[in-house]
Image (cartoon, rainbow, N blue to C red; front, side, top):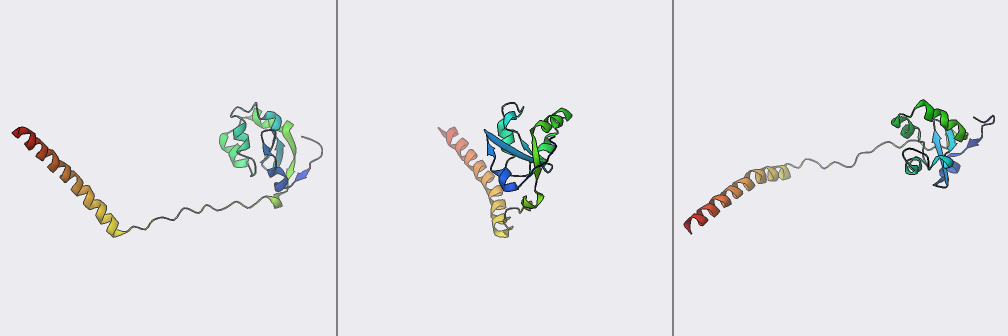
Length: 132
């Protein structure tokens, strides 16, 4: 790593989100991975998907080798100013439909009646074809 460590803001790093200019935030450090885009085993799209956010979880979830971690050192360009990184948003699940007893009853009724109607239709068709 370089002897001096430049502090980058999140907004500054987030601007570098193209194939020809790609910076990542991993474990509080900023990496300019532009030269590595074509060589990344998962493709450049994987790296681009980690731009504009803290890519630490994305990086760790893959389970990179020690060689990959050592390789990162040559792309290191500084540290991220932690105060400028947006707080993680809490997941809010979509609104669940309430269990409406009327619709539940209707579904159960259909589950019972539809097979009976099909059975009746099959028997009628068989009797009709036997007569002719």
